[in-house]
Length: 142
Image 1: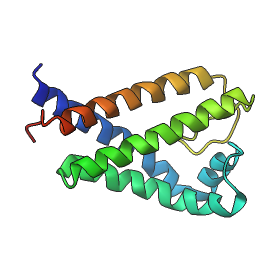
Image 2 (image 1 turned 180 degrees about the vertical axis):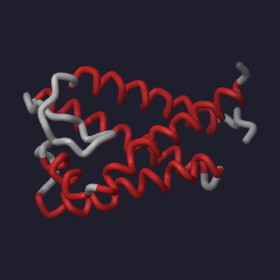
Image 3 (image 1 turned 90 degrees about the vertical axis):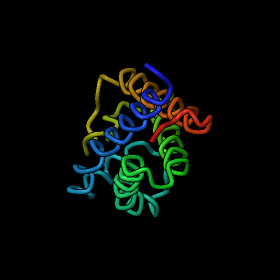
């Protein structure tokens, strides 16, 4: 696999992660807000705003990645979100808060999969960072 193919594959994979994550959150914003609240990170005043805006930002970033619109900015936003998501999960885990991550569902119920969530988000972040590195290095043939 050459660098241009890897750049395209990582960018598209990242877009599909965000496309898969958003629809259920958009369909059930109150449930997603409860999931966000379960992390005990954001002040109450920001929870509903985040629940309404975040899934749409995920969709916009995904389409930017797929349509090659401001690709560098889209990769930056995607990676910034992935860092924030991973940090939130790690923070909850370290504080002993056992939650469902809310990444691909709106469930706020407890889960036994916190290590899995951290590993999975670490893989997503790695894909995002590779895509950004290849894009920044000009190793893309979009």
